[in-house]
Image (cartoon, rainbow, N blue to C red; front, side, top):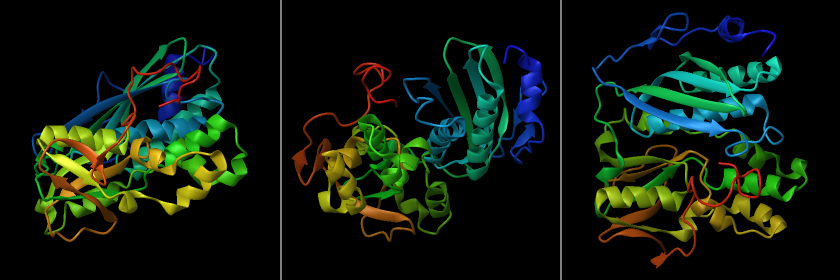
Length: 326
């Protein structure tokens, strides 16, 4: 980085990249220009800090780049919007190898393309540790946003995507277990795969109005449904059998762990959770896991969950010491 310099690096990162249709003016000026066809846009931002949210000895640069974009794209989609553009601020030490920056850029662009968008610009600064801050924009395409506040008593709670796989991969890395035996959960931890199309396709179906509330599962299923229940003024009860994933049981047994803990509190898979009108047919990719009830809080089989419900940014200690990177 020190030898190449900031502006040469910006040129290197952007060379040959093609912007998505939503980006009217990309890198090269004082700011980007992003379309907002219906007069509104959804915007979110998220930050990843080395040894708190990722470790370079656990993930490749490309993995980290993909993860940075995926967690922001998932937030945009969780509002019912189509990702249109990302801007990225990168802080890194001056002696950072160019190959690492190339990997980050390739990963970010690959995930941005999977989400149907592109990287419209950003910033580079010198910092002690590697830090990635991503801002994402989304287009609602004339639809009303889907928020956490729309759940109604009697609704079906459903999810799209896998739960607990990222937490299982983290448990493998923390335990120092033999990687080859756990390749799939390790991949799920390193690069989340939000099922963007499960949400966006459902919003184009005739029964889209049956989708009342929506969120992505980033902090843990119980934690994120807890936010939804509070915002909506309702309670939620999960069916333990419906939530369970038998594919995780052998891994949990090998690690002497609890697969239910991973599924209910693990987070970072960036699956989507929603409530659908009672009796509504769930679209492809969605499965029912519970019911919205009168009251408050989230229960599993009618019983409150004991212990942590999910991730808390200022809880515990830094991942570099003993805590899990999130």
